[in-house]
Image (cartoon, rainbow, N blue to C red; front, side, top):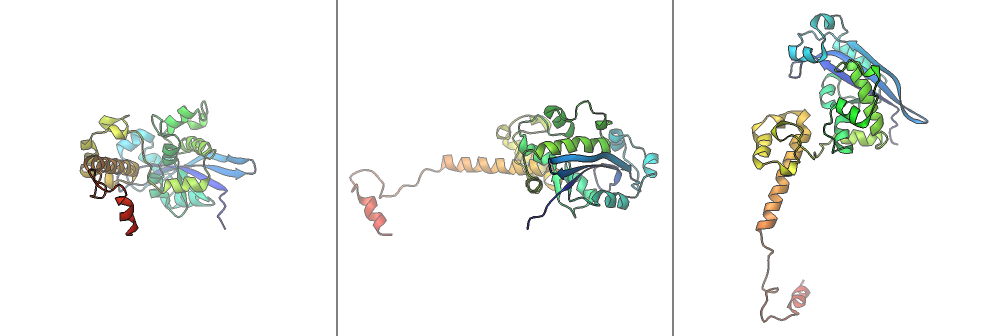
Amino acid sequence: MAETFTLIRVVDVESTGIDDPCEMVEVGWTDVRLYPTGWEIERGPESALVNPGMAISFPAMAVHHITDEQAAAGISPAQAKQNVRAGADILCAHNSAFDSRFIGTDRPWICTFKAARTAWPEMQSHGNGSIRYERGLCLGDDRTQPSHRAGPDTWVTAHILLDLLKIYQPETLIEMTGKPVTLIKVGFGEHFGKRWADVPDSYLDWILNKSKMADDPTKEDTVHTARLEVSKRAAAAVSTSTPFPRTDVYASGGHDPDAWRKEMERF
């Protein structure tokens, strides 16, 4: 019997930094529930400061504006994880590869970032805020502010999730989250905005063999797309350089026109 999902908890983590070791400094959540009329926001946004037990890096502080003194008054990371997971059938985040590092993977996850790349591949950007404006979601809503804080960010992501749930079932979104997405355009660097088919071979080689992207779970889609593009080009090179094999049976010039039939009868 298929599992029934009724509560999706959209979460967002603000952290001490990106590189390990790092820890939460704030966690936010917004609940999306399945009602008889469809999926709706049940409550939120809510948030709690978290004491990371370590210093917050200045680049991270410049993004979320949470100081060490503020975070020190927060709950423990263990309590934050327990609070967020309790009662949720599915956890959801915009870039779940990052947030799940702190929350854990004992629940199914939906990544709205990856799902949006599949649903709307031609978007200029698949960042949380960019999708919000391009799709016209929760505009003029004070609950989206301040940006880059955990609670407001989950409010935006919850609306992106609701938009995706008009297209896909939760099970499909979970499946998407577990697989790499084939990208259409490059979303970073010197070839930003170019279609992957137009990216030079040297840049594909840099991504796969010279950068650290292959070891970064958050770059999974980029690495997957680069590998796929390399494979496509290799296959195309083989098909254009290898002539169609011919045998004496098919060779022209004074042969029996029914020879191919006789040859086939041997098998």
